[in-house]
Length: 207
Image 1 (cartoon, one colour):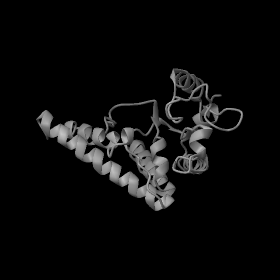
Image 2 (cartoon, one colour; image 1 turned 135 degrees about the vertical axis):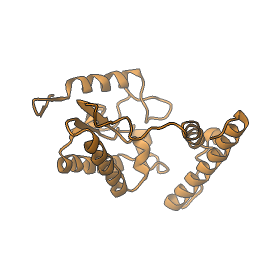
Image 3 (cartoon, helix red, strand yellow; image 1 turned 90 degrees about the vertical axis):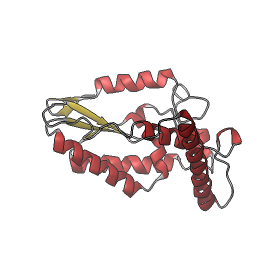
Image 4 (cartoon, one colour; image 1 turned 90 degrees about the horizontal axis):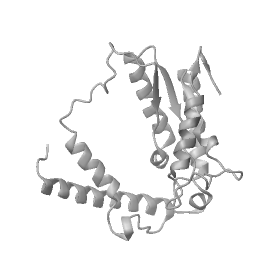
């Protein structure tokens, strides 16, 4: 484990730069042109650096087996892989979910497992040719999730549909104007209210 702030800073910048290289290469292969994916047009993607630092700091903590001890009983367990995963292969995405579901079931046999849909993006984001997080891909991923839930006997929570506007995109009432992917407070409130009214009661999903 790294112990000094200087080493953590180096890890942050190195992985931020490597993440930028990865994203630039990915978009170059998909679009045939250079797209600067850096933060403030710089050659860094801070999310990669942040992830590396967090992983380093938490590296010595015993997170296995995700606190899902057999002796504990969780009535409900919610699973969600975020919008960033839409940039991956849909089959790998589903397989990762299936592996996680099997792991949860092994340790919590009585729990209701809910799988939350991938959330939508605004029309502006969907129209951007440099964005991989298009509505077509999001719909494909959600269709795969629905089938997975049917196969694995989990509960699919359709947050996606609840967030749409009349044109079928992330509603401006909920969208964070800065990127068209994340949410304002109103979006999170609507999300929370949905989950409060959609849960398993006597073997059925309430609506």
